[in-house]
Image 1 (cartoon, rainbow, N blue to C red):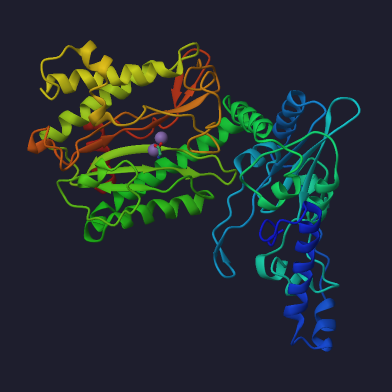
Image 2 (cartoon, rainbow, N blue to C red; image 1 turned 30 degrees about the horizontal axis):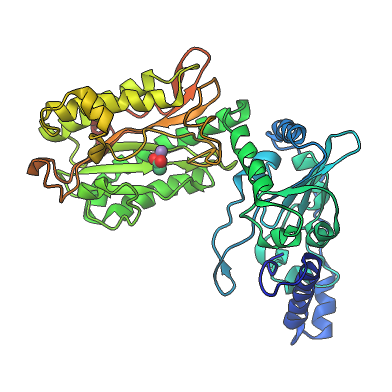
Length: 493
Ligand code: GLY
Ligand code: MN
Ligand code: MN
């Protein structure tokens, strides 16, 4: 599978066959210089490590229900959802692999090259199979002579082991592209993750029908089930500890750079979770006004603010997305406090607007209204009325972005959902979203007094919509300016 998806425009079946041949040739290539004695020696003397104690993943019951919902939406059609392939960094080194979120959502599995196929049955339902790389063959030397041999990459769960783990039938993925190329009947594929699989299916699918699959999967993920909410709680709790770690070492960050902040948080993410859920934004001083500041190579100076936007991704791949803006010295200056308190008040108004039955837009509009009021009060928007400002959107020069988004397996979760179900949609229990207003005065903004320039503030929390309102999952991190100060002082004492 690692060779597929490149090269000439042959048919999918030929392509798949060529991929297999390339794999075998590589084995032969490595085999050059290997004596028959060594090859024979490597074939034997290995213990049977088959595991018989495997329990199903905790999310297995949930993934079965999700596949059933997907099956019901597309009766009679073959559905192909790939996990994705390794991305080459250079030569034989790769970027860390992160499986496609929709594949993870439907299987719980996270391995590269895997593919979930829902095969339509006579009864109108589907039979699901996870196609995976099997254990490496010892007999033909694949385990030590092939690019994806277990000796190099580590032991994989075998197909039988995976059947127990995932709770669904598993099969060898290496023949799948060829089989899909030969198969007949309506089919849809989730695009953008496995070029080899897409190539095998290219004469059988259309962009429009594939897009319907992508949209449906995104919309399925809007309302989180009990397992997902539990994982998001874990992600947030680890993230809270990561923020505490950063506060404890802010003095050292001052001696180095924003990278110290990023690295400190990353340690927590790797020790307690899988990774960070997105590139950490560690933005000190005027860098806080750059929304996607991920270079993180600036100084952390006393007197400046540090905007830290970071989230731990759990082992099951759910991520938190939290921002705090902290005074590096431990105390806000009067102007920093004024701007911070405005953002905090806006966030309070936004969070108060999150409840079942409210429109997704409501919390954004509530937060924007507070920010526009303050900007008017500070004389930054001339003599206009509040309604004029909001009508013209003039506050947006400094508020810049939307006030929040769905959160889950992806930091910007459910991104393929239709406008009517997302931006124009209505909140219901189980939705998890961020509320994250901000004010950003660019260092070169001549329309604001000089003392405002270079101040950037965002406060971001992860909010679960409950039956009767909401729960702030990240409430353990203080938000009010005076509480932030005392929390920092206690951690640094
Ligand atoms: N960290 C990305 C965001 O807040 O949306
Ligand atoms: Mn966010
Ligand atoms: Mn964020």
